[in-house]
Length: 308
Image (cartoon, rainbow, N blue to C red; front, side, top):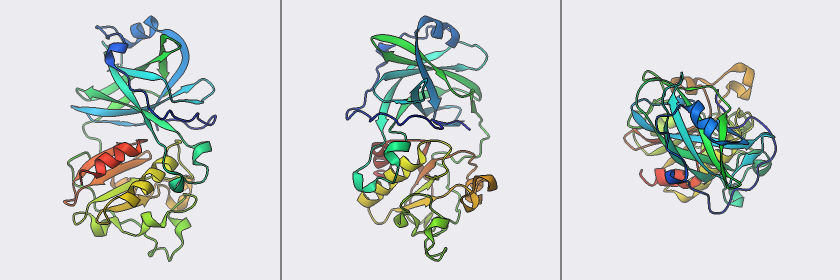
């Protein structure tokens, strides 16, 4: 599983105006390999942690990632870009500039422990994946007036044309999700957020898919293998309070009986998911309008919901 961060120091607060890189700020790959590019940058003790595990071949992919120092404290204010290459030392492509997206929500939608334990921002770059196979990546970060490299904290990512995760334009699998009513009002069975968000457990996805627009999120705030489940559920809760009542907002927990050792719930299996969180924005026709793996900003979710 690829993680934005497993644990570590509490992150610094994200800037009010998130930095956005420009390709001109970073050198062109110019046929060099990732190793050659790395050698051309300064060492800055920065780690790049991918917030995703699935790449779609033949598409431009949203590549989400976090930046951390060696103490695992999250970096929020740096300007960054990404270079990619097929695994094995081929010529790199890039730079692909990244924007830093804040995960902050209004205070009334913030869950317990969100500021201390959750990620505060995510970087996102648009990267073209031309075909199937394994892809390596390297970060470049402007820090202290220099461009420093950010080594990846995870192995190469796979672009598999046969992956089972439904993509944009696909029909969403009509899974049944538990509701407040179906568990007799015992929200702790189906929500590890503190406090539990009943608003996100009123509707069974199977009852609305193909009939009403919906946002379906697979996340587990208390058991997340990353630091982003809590923040993205908070974002979903805030957007649900703003949106039309016609749109169903549904949170699905990840692990059977909320116990890691029991494995993932069957709803994730039917979506082909092996990591969390995942969010699917689904039109009234049942087709996926947008999807996010890992972290995203509340602005990104609002924009996707505006297309429903």
